[in-house]
Image (cartoon, rainbow, N blue to C red; front, side):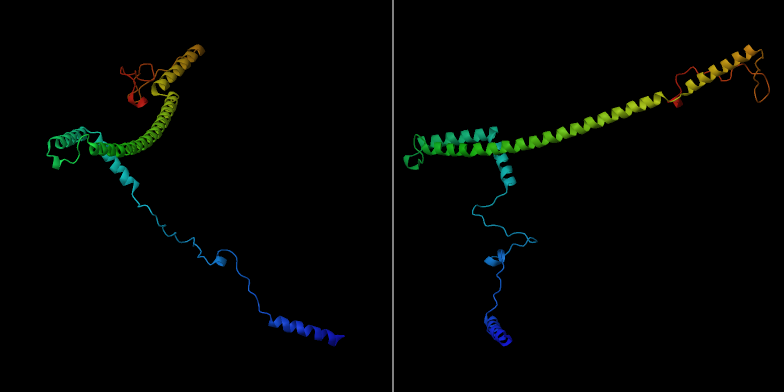
Length: 225
């Protein structure tokens, strides 16, 4: 039985050795053969059929045109051109006239001017509206900051006033001490002991009763603030 099994395995081994090894084709973008876009490099600019232009420069040009169209100089020059056009095509020799009555070419030129002027004026107005909106937003933020600063300063000033109201001034301390001395003298008299007469420390001469010198006649002292 063993030789028969070995004989059966030999043809299978030979057949397996003859079969070519098939490599597995990778899936994804490499399978199609297209180049992969690298994420660490910017994309190449796409080709555009329409010409490129700077929107900011075109907007500034439209504002200049709209500003010129709204001046009296433009109205004067346009009136002069129309009058010269009409007079030339009426009184000039027939061979030199280029737009006879009813002046179709002049009407076409004015219509073309109006068709271009209207979008340019609208574009200038849109840009002005955008600037006004930005300015209003900045003014609103500035007003909010000013209101917040004013409220903060108001609270600080109120806190300072409250703090100063609780501080003891020189006049208040003097009046309290005088009241205490009067109270002590009254108690001493009530007990039957005469009050000692104060003497000056320099010469030993008797001094008038009263501990503190008389208050100045002026207003509140500057140091009390």
